[in-house]
Image (tube, rainbow, N blue to C red; front, side, top):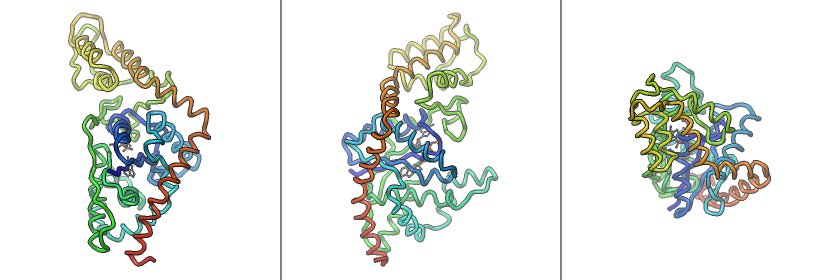
Amino acid sequence: MRILSGLTPSSAGIHLGNYFGAVRQWIRLQEEHDAYYFIATYHAMTSIQDATLLRRNQLEVALDYLALGLDPERSTVYLQQDIPEVTELAWILSNLCPMGMLERCHAYKDKVAKGLSADHGLFAYPVLMAADILIVRSSGVPVGQDQKQHVEVTRDLAMKFNQQFGEVFPLPEPLILEGAAAKVPGIDGEKMSKSYDNDVKIFDPEKRLRKRLMSIVTDTCGVDDPKEPEGNTIFELFRLVADDAAVAAMADRFRAANTGYGYGHAKQELFEALMDHFGPARRERARLEASPGEVEEILRAGAAKVRPVVEDTMAEVRRVTGLR
Ligand code: ADP
Ligand code: TRP
């Protein structure tokens, strides 16, 4: 099956929620599918209008992708702007998209609900996402739960396009995969998100990572009080990165009374487990960072691989719509 997914580089670096909610599944899927993974730079422009920052963030995300195991031999890894035709397809799809459909989409709705004014880019964001998916005629879209709505919009738009112009697009399905974490908690216990400043970046320097984990918000149980592991942020994060025996041992230590084991100890264990789990990826990232030419070449090769696919789709789209 052809699959496609992407992340918006609206901040530098992938966090634990992105990895356990999405990217880890992508890595597994590249083994058996025709996989396209891209960096959604145009999407990031809904929040970043600063050239240096945009350039830095997209490079950071590319480094993260590769270090975590997206393999350019197995999947096609590219930058969204290397196929500017997505914006053309987005425009074409816009004309099939009722306002109401976009008004219900959460990125826009949440912003307006907070009393903030949204611009057209944010409003139209799901249409561009539909174009990303449809331009490679992807049938599966591996995303976290919170992106499901956008894939449903894509499906609707593909259906409308096909009804109007003939069968051009397969109807894509969201792939919400087994093993994907639906809601990785952030350091404040709420859903981890770069926009809440509660995220833990996988590749933060050791010192910063440790400091971040030490600031995880907990209840007031002292070292000798029994504590409930389920739902505890430290434990929930530990569970993602430690093996079963270590997880069971931490749960026992949480539940036991009068052992002098406090949240500080648990945070230290979490820090060590994280460093361990991501040790190989951290080393690979350091290696890649030292050879930016290699990353550029991978992205160039990815763009060259996706190009004929895009040209094929767009030739048909232009023909059936009357643009050619
Ligand atoms: P953010 O909320 O930090 O802006 P994005 O919306 O860019 O993250 O999400 C990118 C991908 O990572 C999506 O597929 C999303 O489902 C997944 N994801 C993000 N945060 C989490 C989380 N806390 N738990 C599980 N998955 C997440
Ligand atoms: N909206 C997605 C996110 O914030 C990123 C994205 C853009 C995407 N285009 C896509 C994901 C196409 C899957 C398919 O994470």
